View 1 (cartoon, helix red, strand yellow):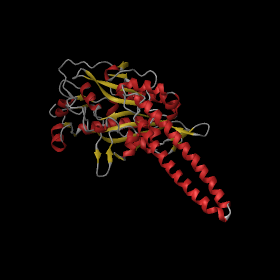
View 2 (spheres, helix red, strand yellow):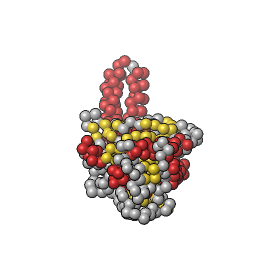
View 3 (cartoon, one colour):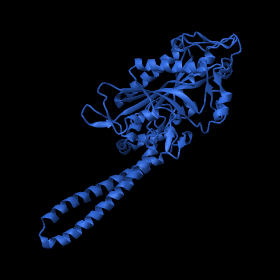
View 4 (cartoon, rainbow, N blue to C red):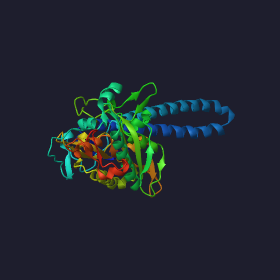
Length: 422
C-alpha cells in the first residue's frame, strides 16, 4: 500500500509512477476522493463521539426529573455515533480497496517502458565457447542420469521432474554453498512454511494481476508460495522490529510453487520454467533511508555467487512496466545459456520500500522514538534454475561436466560429473 500522506500531498508523483508502469492513473484521483471522504467521515464520528461523552456527563449530573428527556437525547446520540462509525468503516474500506490497486512508486532512475526496455548495467565473465557442438541441459542431465523429465511428467504432469543422483547432489551443493555465503554476510537462516494465509499473500502484493499464477487450496483457504519472500515478509507482520543494530537479514530455504499461467510455449524444455523448485531467498528489513544501499549489497552478494561458479552474466535494471506490484526497483541477473544463445534470468533483487510493510503493519522505531513503516528487500541467492547454466557452461565434449571449484567441498570433492561408461 502506498503512503496516504504522499498520495495526499503529491498525487502527481503517484500518477507519474502509474504512467511509467503503464497503469491507469485515474485510480489516483479516485483514491484521493475516497481519502477525503474517509477523513470527513472520521471527523464526523469523532465529533459525535465527543459530544456523546460530554452529554453522558450531563445526564449523570442532571436532576431526576430532567433525566428521561436527556436519556432520550442520549439514545439518539448513541444511534448517530453508531451510524457515523459504520460510515467511517465503510469509506475507510473503500479507500483501502482503491489504495491497494495503486502499485508501489518506482524510484527515480528506473527505466520507463515494458519488458524489452531494460537497461544493461554490466556484463561479467567470458562468454563460454566450445570446439564441439554443446548439449543442452536436458541432454546432459539424461547422460549423467541427473535429471529425469519423463518420470516427472508421469508422476505429476508437464513441467515436473526428478533430480536424481549427481543432479540431486549438485542442487544440494549449490544451496549449501549459498547458505554458507548468507551466513557469512550475517543472515539468519529460516526454513519457511510454503502455505500461507490470504492476508499474508495479499500483503506482499502477490494477489494482484498475477494471482492466477499462484496455487490456491480453497478448502483450507491457503496459498502455496512461489517464493519464501512471502513467508519472510509475514514473519514480522503486526510487529515493531528492532533495527538499532542495523538491518534484519533472513535467508529463507523453501520449495516454491508456480502455476506459470500465461507462459505456455516459453522455456518449456527442461527445468528452466517449472511448477516446483527449491530456492534460497534473501530477505531484509531495513531503515528506508538505507534501502537503496542495501539493494546494492544484495546484488553484490549475488554476483559473488555467480562469479564463484564461473558463469557469464549480465545485470539489468528492469523497466517500470515489467516490475511486480510491490517493487520500486528491481535488478535482474541473467546468465548466458550457451545452447540458447541468450541470457536467462537467474536472480531478481527488489527494493519494495515500505509498500509491503504498510500492508502487513511492520514498523520500526525511529531515532525520535516514533514508529514508522520499515523497508523490505528480497533477492535470490540460489535456485534450481541455476543448474541449467552450470551444466551447459561447464560441459565437456564427452558429456561430462566440470564441477566449479566453489561447489566441490559440498559434493564430496567431485571435480567432474561423468556419464556412465566414460
